[in-house]
Structures are given as C-alpha cells and as structure tokens.
Amino acid sequence: MLLLTPRARLRRLLRPGAPSPLEGRTVLVTGASSGIGEATALEAAGRGATVLLVARRSVELDRVREQIVAAGGTAASYVCDLTDLDAIDALVARVLDEHGGVDYLVNNAGRSIRRSLDLSYDRFHDVERTMAINYFGPVRLTMGLLPAMRAQGFGQVVNILSWGVQLKAPKFSAYLASKTALDTWSRIAAREAYGDNVTFTNMRFGLVRTAMVAPTEEYDGLRAMSPERAAEHVVRALEDRPVVWNVPVGVAGEVLGFVSPRLVDAVMHRLDRRTKNSAAAIGR
Ligand SMILES: NC(=O)c1ccc[n+]([C@@H]2O[C@H](COP(=O)([O-])OP(=O)(O)OC[C@H]3O[C@@H](n4cnc5c(N)ncnc54)[C@H](OP(=O)(O)O)[C@@H]3O)[C@@H](O)[C@H]2O)c1
Image (cartoon, rainbow, N blue to C red; front, top):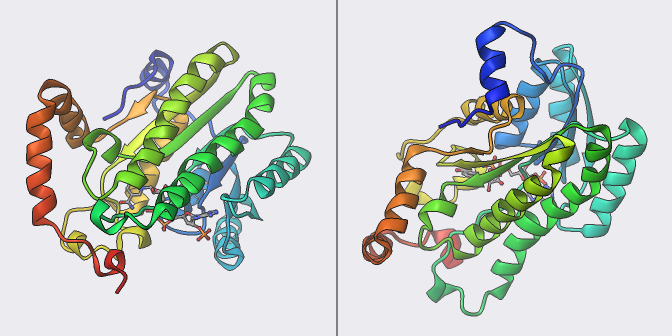
C-alpha cells in the first residue's frame, strides 16, 4: 500500500514514461550482499543510479558489483560491519570524500531473531545484537550522511522494517523493538529535516523469501514475496518518497490493536502457543 506524495502522484500523471529520478544520482544500500539489499542494488543500478554497496562479506559485494558493471551500470563496494560505530564513521568519511555525499540511503542491513521469552531470559545479548544492527547502526550511518543531504537540499532515506512493528508478533520482542525504534526515530528526523527537502520512508514488509527466514521451519510453505518483487517496491519508494509503505495485513493488525488491544493479545497468545520455536532458536 503506497501513500504517494502529491508531487510523486503529479509526476506519474503528467509524465508516465519519464526517466527515473534515480538516474545520475548516488544510492547507498546497506546489506547489499544478499536478499532484498542485493535485489535493490541491481534494480537501482538498472535505473541509472551509481550504487554504493555496503555489507561485511566482500566476496558477495564484489559479485553484486561485477553483475552491475557487466550490465553497464556503476557501483562501488564498501566492506563495513554496521555494528561497529567507528567503522561506520570511517565509511561515512570515505563516502563523503569519494562521492561528496549520497542522494538516497537504503537502511536495509538487518538481523532477525525469532525466539520466545522463556528461551531468552539468559540471552540479553539477543536484545543487544538486534539493537546494534537494526537501530544503532542505521541511526549512526544516517546521522553521518544527513548533514550533506540537508546542505545540498535533497535526500531520501528508506528504512526496511517489518509488518511486525504493527502486528507485534510474539517471539519477536527483541527484533521488532529494534525495528520500531528506527521507525520512530526516522519519523521524528523527517519532521526536523522536512524544510531541507530530506524525506524518510518506513517500509513495513511482510514475509520475503531470503536467507534470513530460511532457519524458521514454520515459514516453509507460507506465501512470501520474492526479493526481486520487494526490491521493485523499495525502488518505487526511493522514487516516490512516500512517508510509509505497508502491507494490508500490517494495517489491519495495527487498527485492531488500537480498537481492541486485549482481544488482540488473546488471539496473539493463542497463535503463539500453536507455533514452535525453530530448531535454531532452541539452539539445536
Ligand atoms: N526476509 C523477510 O521476511 C523480511 C521481512 C521484513 C523485513 N526484513 C528486513 O529486510 C532486511 C534485509 O533482510 P533479508 O531478508 O534480505 O535477509 P538477508 O539476505 O540475510 O540480508 C541481510 C543483509 O544484512 C547484512 N548484514 C547483516 N549484519 C550486518 C552487519 N553487522 N554489518 C553489515 N551488514 C550486515 C548482510 O550482509 P553481510 O552478511 O555480508 O554483512 C546481508 O546483506 C533486514 O533488515 C530484515 O530485517 C526481512
């Protein structure tokens, strides 16, 4: 579900076949070594953007970069562990030096943990790990790149979040709290940066078939979006700059949770009892 800005709606109406606004612009994608990030990098490069690929696995980043270059696009890869705040500062310094800043930032790198609370009492590091990569990392990176965006009078930041921030699904307390933190931080940043033409889009995805969900046996056979389809939505959000992008189930869950929170607690509790922790979550 896409809430377009009036300007984007007008652009589509008046110039349906117009070139992408990404053409000739710089797009930094974190977590570009696989899944949604990789597919987004390829899609953005296909629209004429210079794509900066960020993740830890250099071999995978080089594979994606080579694929972009072979197709006639432009890309550069930057190895960075986004849980290391000093490494993020060094990345920002390098990107500013080599490119003068970025026009579009996709905060996509992330980590999901699906584990019930009763298996988590002695695992506070689950909370720390999810906050490190899903909240502190993207906030540090955004804060590093934001001054140049504001100075140039243009910027668009897309955060890859989850419908779980609306559904508040059991077994995901650490993961969804970290995604919700970024969701809220960005909404407030958007209000402060509004006058400098810097916008933020929070994308709350449902299930996407990537390496991240592979360890969860409960998802086998469930309907899931392909990473390529997800990437089309991400690039559309880069171009059109909506405030938020949701899937209908997420919106329904949010409304129900607002109208009848105790009832939703009861339903979610039943669902929780019917679904198991994965072998990976149990530690097998
Ligand atoms: N799949 C879903 O159903 C789903 C649903 C909603 C939201 N999401 C979100 O979508 C995003 C992408 O996930 P995905 O599904 O595409 O899974 P994925 O294929 O496992 O991709 C995760 C990416 O994050 C990068 N990453 C992880 N830790 C990192 C670190 N410390 N530093 C730098 N990069 C790091 C990984 O690269 P390296 O390992 O090379 O560092 C990888 O490129 C995540 O934020 C996830 O929470 C996924």
